[in-house]
Image: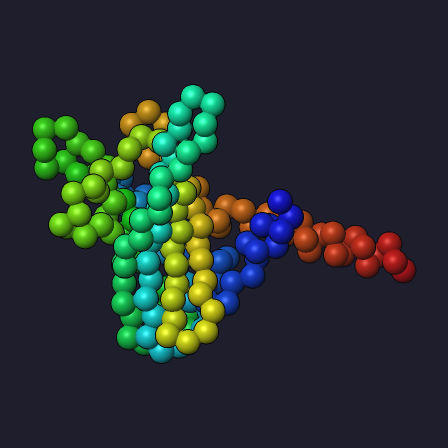
Length: 171
């Protein structure tokens, strides 16, 4: 588990301390990501990868991953913030349902099942390493909740505290 925590604090493209998920007021009918970029670069593609928990008695089965392209950026500036729509409430039919906002309109499987979903925003520059922003989508009855990597910044703080404690005890 420590290795995962270490991976959470090393981001070559995004400024994780200034990235977050939020519900769009006033109606709270969409969830978005606000992502701040650390460095300028050329073109970049931003994708959403999703894997759904299928469950089963005594089983832990996840679906195959799906990936949608959200944005194609021609030029990326240092400190630029991108607002990315993730999910939205679709009230066009008789029964409202949540759907992936990123899904291509011709994709017939845009509805979000009321289970757990492992999600990842993938930042793909033309050159250099990819970067990732991980989050979970889950439901409390009919209301979706998103828990993003920005909530796990405790890993960085604990690492700093341990390093300070270790250096003081070495003196």
